[in-house]
Image 1: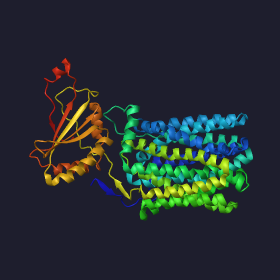
Image 2 (image 1 turned 180 degrees about the horizontal axis):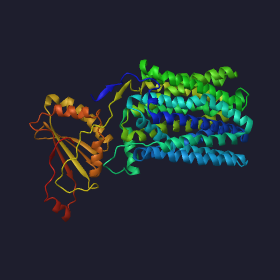
Image 3 (image 1 turned 45 degrees about the horizontal axis):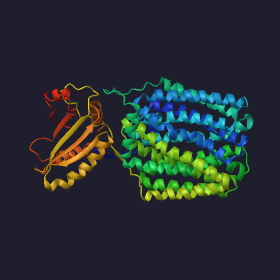
Image 4 (image 1 turned 180 degrees about the vertical axis):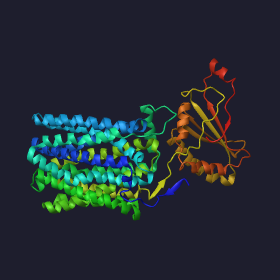
Length: 550
């Protein structure tokens, strides 16, 4: 069957059966703890060296902006190179940057813009790491464990968020922000060791790596022709744009609304993390009984409530309660988006799809942090939070037009039915352009079903790299229809066919069923030739007229 319902839902801890996932998860736990401690130090240091609200908010933006700018390139690299190697490079880079930041801070040389530069560089490391890490989840666990693995990854971050900010606040209060930066530098070591020892086995490919430009364009094309992923991108952008107000303005909430210090700021972040842990546990149960769209809408509305409480409350306990709600809705919504993208994407392009999702979501966060910082600078943090709450309610309404898919999983495993044909011409891998013509015989009674199937065939062909797709009808024999498309090279034609999944195969099976000719569907594979002398000599050689799957 090409499409299949999700199997009986694995337990929340099922991914821990994988040794590598378990080891990476625990190592990431330590790395996340260091990152949160560093984040507390950076945010509070900015409040100490600058009175500008927009500069405080830009600390968050400087971390998320690189993810928006560079994730697509990182996703293309993750689909074409060793994901383990990319993660190692990213972790090593962030280790060096963190050490440099700690040294500069200890020397008393830090300035607002220098602090933003360091956090931007750490964001660049995250931008390189995240697509490879997200794509590698499917390399570590079996496919039906992916939703649970995504939830556990969210839990890893939010377990540390429940205690990390409070620890970070205590470190900053006791020893200063430079100490927080030093702790973060040490936190990368365990993950680097685990990744270094991981022996990732990947199936050998008979094709060369895609050039970076072609890989990026292939990722953009795939996502642009995948309606489920497009919906997630729009919803993720809207959610990130509004929801980041909580984290971006939380230092100001602690300092100006509740009148506290760095320790209170850490406690508030800890409350946010407690809610996120609850959201991670609750997410799996909810996805089993509630439609995805309703979970997403509830996440938007709950976050609006959380921002409103932060804006209006001067009680640290009430604000903490609001942050628990915000943390739970943050994890519920973003993990739902993450799982939807992962289960809507085949392995060959999952890194690029995840990078585009992160670009949309973190791009929204970077833009939102800047916008709400400017609003807070002009009108105050409470007013900025109320404005973001109103925007969040608008984000929930988007679901009326862009509804998320329900609890089904496409079978996106490679079909592996196609075999490279034996050719009469001696083609090189880079020979081309290749022209494909496929001839069908369709009865008039089947015409409606045929055109519906061809509309889906067109989307799949173009999504997987076909160019100049057309469908033509024979004027002298109206039952004959010819589908044509082009591939720039023979290699790209092979790559196009190897991307076919079991889910895609339903269209081909339908077309074979509708074909009523006395012979099987005829496929002609041809190479374009210019009309010069050399090409005319080629025309003396046998042309290709090969029957079989396209």
